[in-house]
Amino acid sequence: MIPFSWIDGVELIKVLLRHRRTVHTGAGDYEVRPVVFVHLLGSDGEGWGECVALARPTYTEEYADGALAVLEGVLVPMLMECWSARGYLTATQVGECLHRIRGHPMSKMALEMAVLDIELKTAKLSLADRLGGTRKRVEVGAVVGINTDEKGLLSEVAVLVEKGYRRVKMKIMPGFDVCPTRKVREEFPDLQLQVDANGSYTTSQIPELIALDTLSLSLLEQPFADDDLLSHAELRKVMSTPICLDESIRSVNDVHLAIALGACDSLCVKPGRVGGYLSAVAIHDVCVGAGMPVWCGGMYETAVARSANVSLASLPGFSLPSDLEAPSDYLEVDVAEMLEVRYGEIDVPTSYGLPVWPDEDILMQVATERRWIPVKKQ
Ligand SMILES: [Mg+2]
Image (cartoon, rainbow, N blue to C red):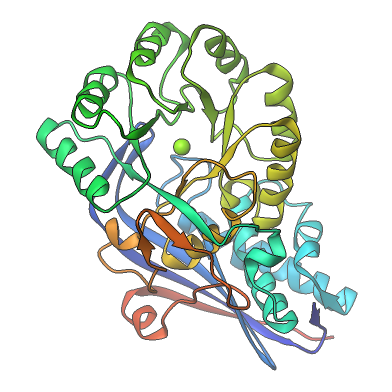
């Protein structure tokens, strides 16, 4: 809990990072990775949060510059007003305070994360303990983007296999699906392999998707548009490869609907897409109750949010390998150092609060905007 006299203000820091190589997906291509950090500063310390919205609104409607604007103009003032009126603030209250604002779950998550950070440090609790984690280590999977150069694709996968990642996820899209996936399968017959279409298919392309059934994939992620649960349910009746939903799931209610329709076999949980770590836990709990496995997806985030995701992935229902590869694999420069991956696993952090904070020296080099919002005390 943050007492009334604690917060002096909130700093919003936008940094511009670069991908090591252009990331190609069925939803868009990314060369740069802008990230907005929330830095809560008060009388006794500080708390950090990361907004994982991408450069452009290609994954969901949110994007980094929009997030910066809504945080500065709407969400931070509203949260501070709520804190002033109540006399204190807890992480569970962040969602309540901001519920009148529709959408913007990634921006809301960044604020929840910063409050949670302070709360956990005060209570001397690790994030994993707070969320209900039960594992000491979690399995790590990695992702390859669309690479139309066959040799290049195989060598990218080979590097990940060499590094010991427990499974590899390939991005696919219409025209880049069965053939490249078969090549990877032939080269790596024992690899745990899954594919992600980022909603790029329509029902007229179901035959192409069914052809993937021969490739022993552990799952096919989000073949159709995010609002098309019925087509996912129809596909599930005719495919043997398990269907996983990502973009379609933004709330617990979405999970209930997807289960009722029989639209998926598993879920990719991303705290940013669902409004924060506490909502992610609620979704995890519903899935555990329904016997549905989940795993933690990635947003090409920095080590700050990615290390927090390790804590989330330590919950018992996260029974599939999560996208937790080191950001140094995809970012030229990161704002902090990621926890070490060893033999395809990563230790769940036990330190109090967020496991990793941004390094101020690196922030000085990569920040493109810093905005200070002082709190008006009553
Ligand atoms: Mg996905």
